[in-house]
Image 1 (cartoon, rainbow, N blue to C red):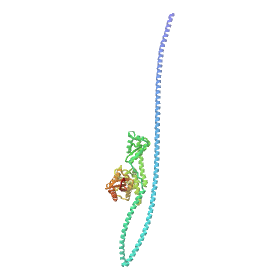
Image 2: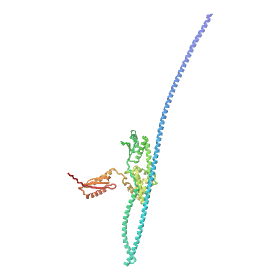
Image 3: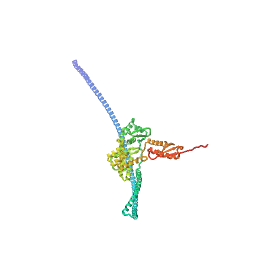
Image 4: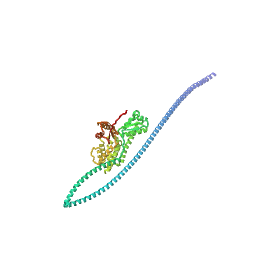
Length: 543
């Protein structure tokens, strides 16, 4: 009974144990799975954490790089702003200096104009006083001549009456016969006296006319004297140091090529220390190139873009100076109205030369001479001044337009409606067409005076040497001449003769013969002095 009871208990216990073991096994499996899931979750979280850390580090690095880039950009922007501010300061300073320079030039020009006007007024005042004195003297002389003439008429009438009475007494003629006899004798005497008076009057008028013409020309020259400035075809620009030459040339010569292409002027850089040379026949282009080069050297920034900008500024300045030169010439001469385009062309003569003589200065001088002579002769002074100023206007653009400067000048003045007298003076000042007015004659005379006065124009070295050689050869052709030397720039020639062949009396004839041949064969300015030297030396030695 007891055994039967124990079996179920054992079975139950075994079942419990078995159930507990199976339960423990399954729970262990569950726990292991949970542990595995937990481990997997932990690994996943760890991987995600590491990924987030790596992403955070990458983001931090990116932000750091961005911050560095922003910092570098800020520094570059700062440098650019500083450079831009310096350039603006430099430009503003240059602008202020240019304005000050322009103001100083304007003040100086105004002072010069005022001084010239004062001198002109003083001269005109002195001329008026002199003219009044001359008129007073002439009036006194005329009064004296009139009184003398009245006395002579009275004397003649008295003589006629005496002769009539004498004839009545001697010839016993009636009144009509006596009157005819007296008139015939008187007519014969008066014819002789009239012929003598006409001859004396013609000689006196000719002498007075020559004297008066010389006086008018001398007064005109004295009242309009001008300096002569020799013009050349090169300009020299000073450099602060030798390093500047390399900067002007540029890499592989690009700066110098750009400068020459923009200005049309040759830039010569040689071994001459601290200078560069600008060469060209066009004076306007050479002036533009000179101003541009001086500004580039002063600025220090030399590259093709800067060169182009500077050349444009210099060209504008020169164009302004050209118009201002034309206006100054008009103001100096008192011409108040002229077409602006013609004023521009007139100003270009400032940069035009003829045989080394500045054409604008020559034109102003001709205008003053013509105006002074016209005033002395009672002609239209303003018209003469205008014609003299414009007589060479065609030379301003004769390099750009075909035709002579006379034809170009005539066409220009007709285009801008200048008076016919002015146009004819321009056309006739070289004798191409007839002169239709006295003003045209005065312009020709003034042009000759201005261009022929000593030092006004230069001649070529070749012509100068040829004239000296020909002068010496003329003297050496004569028999008995030992040697001849042209001295004092061809104004004198000294001839050495052989004393055995030529006597003292013969040297006078020789000097005259040489003079005649020189006058016949040579063209020369002024006079040439001919000196013939004959010297005989006797040398002996005492022993």
